[in-house]
Amino acid sequence: MSVYLQQFVCFYQILALYDAFDSISVDAVVQYVSSLQQNDGSFFGDKWGEVDTRFSFCAVACLALLVR
Image (cartoon, rainbow, N blue to C red; front, side):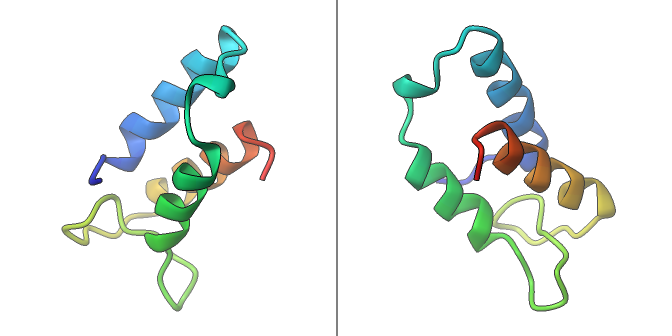
């Protein structure tokens, strides 16, 4: 899976609006988002490795929406 982190957060906001988190594998999402975290705490935006502070926000927002 390789999804741009900014797209992820938008998708999860929509799922939150419809209370539809049961339609996804939350554990797989948490694993994917966690895999993008770097040793210094920053996050890649996707598997290609772009690093930006907005991705840290998106990662935290995704995990917060998933209550993780």
